[in-house]
Amino acid sequence: MTTERVNPPELSPPTGFSHAVVAAGSRLVFLAGQTALDTDGKITGDTLPEQFEKALGNLLTALRAAGGTPADLARITVYATDVADYRAHARQLGRIWRESAGRDYPAMAVVEVVRLWDERALVELDGFAVLP
Image (cartoon, rainbow, N blue to C red):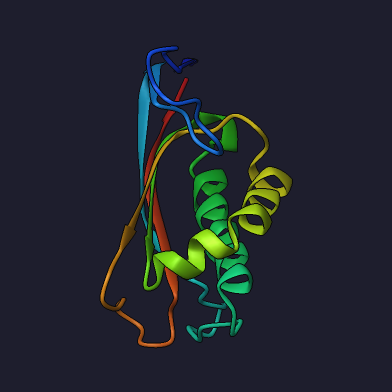
């Protein structure tokens, strides 16, 4: 697989995401929305950073089980119940991302939602990857 992160100089410099990702490969992996569920199906963590770390870990676990790596991620959507809280923790969330997934950022969006499937969930991540 080849990926090219495209960040045109005509756009604001991206921080923690890429404006576009061009990916060529032979397998697409569509990743279902992941929250901070543990193996018993219970939400873990009371804060957004705690839940983000677990949700990202769950997403990467699914990706690895499908044969991918964080560098294969082409697109991620983050659904947050409070974007102001997300922005307030952006630096910490960025650190969590870099420690778990590295610095090859996919195209990303953060969307505020009224609530998620599990009422205790503060954040959910989904996306897709392109594998060789």
